[in-house]
Picture 1 (cartoon, rainbow, N blue to C red):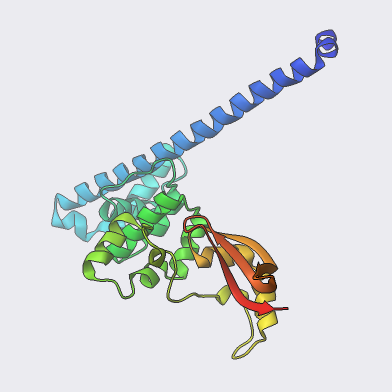
Picture 2 (tube, helix red, strand yellow):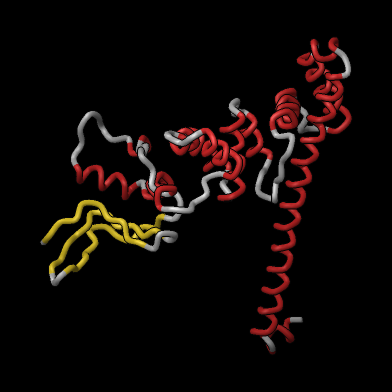
Length: 256
């Protein structure tokens, strides 16, 4: 084997690389399939629990005790994963997301974040956005905390809010991208006043969160970016490019 490797080193390394990539991709695909099946299984467990409770008022009355007993018995028979809280979320999963698709995107931790939202319109919106934007659990939590749904729903008609909840934030015109208000709590700047330069520094230091707050499609171009108009140089503190609108967006142009 060492002779083969010595004589055909490049080809041998390529073979190793091809096999390694193939196995790695297969493992990733398998993990996605397993995760998808697990989520569907939890939904069906929730369905069984709800159907069992609905067969009699006495069963529904002692629902909390039912979850305790189920947790003990299922753990003995099947092992970990059937705590009372987990069973509670499985039940809630079925009750609040009776029609769902995972598309290999929604993990169990996503589901827990979604079913914890009491308002159906708000829950449906975050469900649609998580799938549309392929949000991580961390990003879903962040968007919930900053109240993205309420920001986007503000000032919309009932029909528009229903569409927003069903489809997520669909971009059709510039007004669908630019928001009326922005929240920059992540900057941790002193109140009530801070200098403009301090704000600029803080935004650069928290660039990832800043781009997420701006919304879909913004890319950072530069700081103190020079723009030449009619042979005059202007400098923007911060410049962004929007990939959907295909325009540069700048803040505070200064002539030098």
